Length: 202
Length: 419
Ligand code: HEM
Ligand code: FES
Image: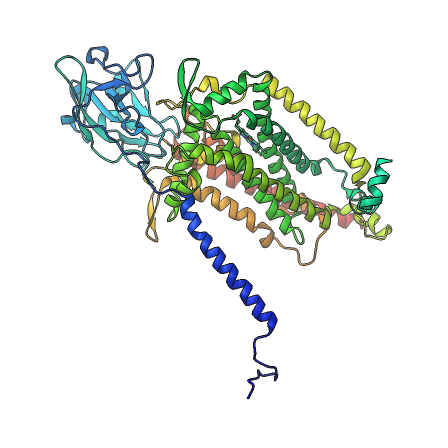
């Protein structure tokens, strides 16, 4: 007996329905096979992102300017001075970029980690924790202690005397601190890695 | 002679009857779309010139004794060609004019309610054109690989990465790895000179086909004249010859203005910005990205929360949700403000208090978020600026709404007296 629907028509699949179903199935299969393509188009993480390689014992060198790559001398800095530095031999990696600042040792307050400072030198990651621009030093000529770190991109402000605490703007967390000390020959060396996460927190 | 030869083979007469006799409304605000189209043509021509010299690579090469990325070096060399810097500036100025013209065109369609049935399709195509054009400008901005390009693209990379749930994958897909990856410039180059132009040409073609099929909207004042003429044709001037004369003169006049600007107003002087280096200059994006840039400055850093297992960061709020919501509103407009039957006349914006004041408030929001991009030079705290943005936008809505209500009531009374 042939099955029929309520109006008495054959319930068999018509040629047209079959053809339509066939085309749809083929389309779905082809689309599905293309999905793997999307994975190919987005290379997996390999050595990207901000992965710092700076380590205790690295010496500090200028990151830019006409003395780029040469060693820093502690005697060249007064309270209120600041400069961007790299660990010697590791300047290819922007994650290693550090904002070095000299202030008065007595001005440091929590949450600055005083054991990571020396003779007023304090150092923070120079990569803004908002969207990754390189921070700048806004120097107050009259009152060095009123100087601050500001990101030129969206004006996040960090307080160098308080562990680079966020004083304003969109940055979600402070810049990570890194230990520095003045060595016997007057050059500067790192004494630790970064104390926290660096770069954009996305 | 030649025309006859082709006519015998291609039946050009029929084509002329069908397309070249089409009526075009003789009103200057109907020209914004044409300005966008002509800017695109200029972009293609100058872009082909640039593409013949540009090198999409970040490999280091020597330029005047310094090691710089090859892309940067090739653009510096373009600037040194005879007329090279002018052509680069024409390209960049045309990009700005194209975007400005699309926005003006969109505003014209919005305020006259020309997006209503049956023109929803072209409203959506128009919005896609705006989005893809912004994509063209964004991918083009990276190509010179100057300190500016790299900083701007890096910011966009982290915004893409902050997209909730899929950000990690989306950012690697768009930027071909984690920026700055070596693959980013080649991928952006291909997008910029190949995929995006093809997409734009396709969208423009679809836009124009739908337009030819549906015809323009026209002022209500035409309705009586139209009825007298039998009501089928739109009142206006034919595409050939009248409108074509206007269009061609418009194209050359536009070219004149752009060349003049390119000659005298420097734009994106990459020699001054220099190749990528470990300092970020104070930088602002081109004007069309300023609202997003300004909005990013207003979001306080501690404003983050978790939604369905994904962290929503301030970056995502400013860079993803703000433009995303604006885009959704634009997409939704023709489906919220509907006409029950096909509408071929434009509305007078003065008689639509709600829609017109909403449009004014939207424009004010974009203006105020643009101003927020300058809080560092204006010395305004982000929190107070956020309040100004809300207050001014709301005030713009209320004031324009009340004025328009008063106006339409007065206009109605006037009609009453007359009749
Ligand atoms: C077929 C079309 C196009 C081609 C072949 C093309 C080609 C190029 C090339 C080779 C560059 C790099 C050289 C340079 O930076 O000066 C460039 C830059 C650029 N393009 Fe295009 N482009 C096209 C369309 C567009 C469109 C539609 C827009 C935007 C609406 C656009 C916006 C830009 C911008 C903003 C730059 C940066 C210019 C600068 O350095 O000042 N381009 N384009
Ligand atoms: S990147 Fe530093 S404030 Fe946005």
